[in-house]
Length: 148
Image (cartoon, rainbow, N blue to C red; front, top):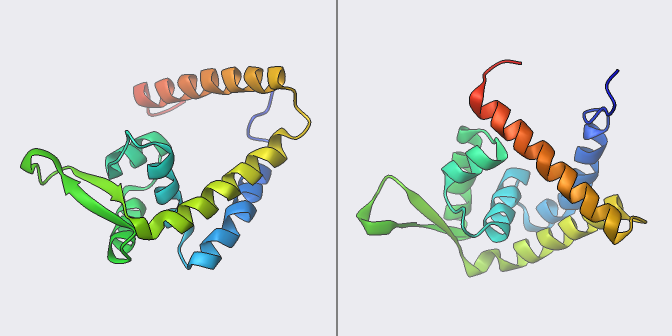
């Protein structure tokens, strides 16, 4: 018997998140992937390459590349290259993205507040530690093996 079934409610969690951020996408006329990239860059400033996004969030390389191109064309991000290394583009958020990021972060906060409503700070710390351990287990396994 499996003591917990983490995938049992994953679609409900994804649906709730999509509802929370969907209005932001509509308001700013951007795709979910574009919003996800802007929020990733804003929330994780030390990870600023497309490769970082693909590896850390397990996103499709082609979808990330297409979204970055659109964001760049829209003036929301720009590419910078360190030490004339044209292979690795570091993505920098442009000022034009500030309202989108503010709305996106507010939507993320709403999502979290809905999920954590009624939990004590001790319960939240326990959940945080447990999810961190599960993430480390999953990440390690996926990097070491190609099959279950």
